[in-house]
Image (tube, rainbow, N blue to C red; front, side, top):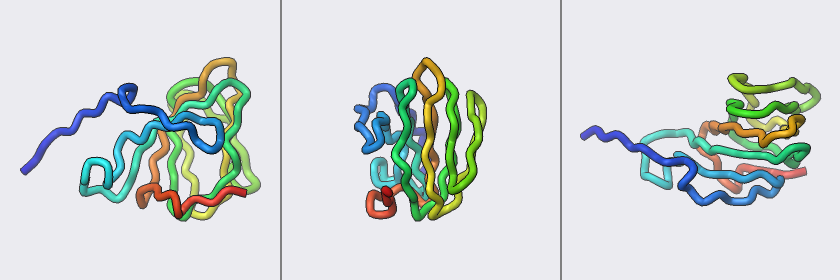
Amino acid sequence: MTFVLVVDTYAIPAACGAEESMIRQIFHPHTYKLETRYSIAHCTLGPGKSTKPHMLKSSEVYYIIKGSGTIYVDKESADVGPGKSVYVPPNSRQSIKNTSDVRLEFLCIVDPAWRKEDERFD
């Protein structure tokens, strides 16, 4: 049996991330009992704010929707803006800073799916 699952991202209650971001978990295998390995979250970060440096056991891809910022992965950094994607390897120290005067809006795709016990903060 096939089906189409449509989710209104902005109707999902936002959780405050430990790093001052607002996170909406759009798709996660445990939320909708999906047959996927990955999870997708919609995140926003206020002007001048940064996420706390952290590491995931999983790989992660950031896709920037709105605003601009600088992403830090281990000892490297890159400027990002709308339409840019960044791959973060597993176990890499990572953070992102909003360098614009508008909210930085981005998707985080984590594979295998994000789990609290797989995330470590400095």
